[in-house]
Image (cartoon, rainbow over all chains, first blue to last red; front, side, top):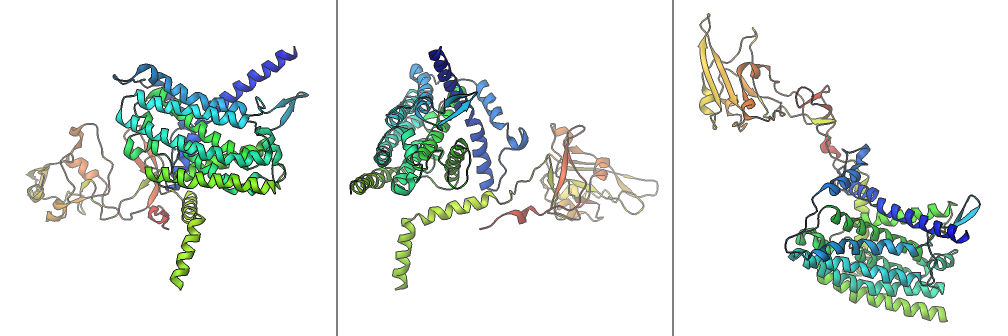
Length: 329
Length: 188
């Protein structure tokens, strides 16, 4: 009986998480278009629903009913596999991510995470690395020059930015003496990590921008020179898979930044429910992503590589050494 | 000395991403500025200036008689040959157009007919919404031209309006003067 309840709880949590992750791109696309509009003195979507609130639903219906086109010369198996490979890892990662300690419903304590892994951070980086396969396969299988160029760029970008990203979190792990995300948040109960690790936060956030392929690092889907990058040839629901994956990664990077550097659900000054604090912080970083997108121009390809290897990598390594020396002293 | 200081300041600013922060502050300010979008045709409509060259109209004199004397000068000067006038003489011996047709599909709204008219009978008015599904509907006859709205008196404003799709695609408005959307543009 105990086992059945625990199992049922896990299944429910996973289903709830998947539902949230699948539905969250709807308000996010709306928000992105609204913010874009107002930053450019436009209004953004206004026609469907109140202030265009139902616009993402209309877009979703449109994508569902559109022709699912596969190019004649495409590698059909890889072409169909790629969107799933791009979509699954960002969803899988959320298994290891805690959203709070626990809440009590009907007298039973329910933990706000699916699993408390002791190597959660490692798991996150290992699984998110798989996502690049979706991009590579998608670009390669479409048999289009734009898509191949886009996926080559993505490939190089992901590989070179995952290294400083991984190095940047080592400082956090050293401070918390644990790789469990839950322990990392608990270690920040008094002072947030961003105070001790400003450089680590900077490197992690910039590398996260690149990882999510957002402006100023969105070379993989540079509209101006590549059409749409690796998903140029995709249409209909397969294209929607890539979009959902992109937003899930934006969300993931925001959640990771909050957990690793901004104290997770630990609040300051204002006593709010921990979950609300967490959501507010994540919302701020999601907004920051959108804000960046409509402020900065795109980096050139060699600049992107130079920032990754010549700035972020030395910075993150120096961060590790300095943190180690200070902790040892 | 001051140049060296400037350079040091620039480098410090560069180190703290001053230019990126400036950009972010600018876009953030713009986010709360008023949009310049005109909600045409659902809620708002732009009023043309008096000098605006919209749809043609024919004028009447004080007695309510059509001013046009059917001299056909407008038809002669028209660069795209879109005016057709057939004159007649009424019982008082005055010339008037029996037929006065303008093919607005061909018209380029240059206003030369207005300039050429010796009787000040034709002019280009304020109406600018006369799209049609058929080019045949764009040939406007004499009586329709007499009923068209004249020159605008005010202009440049955006007024509240409403799209009427029941009888015709036409934007109705009750106001004569609106807000100046040009002033809403944030310039920094």
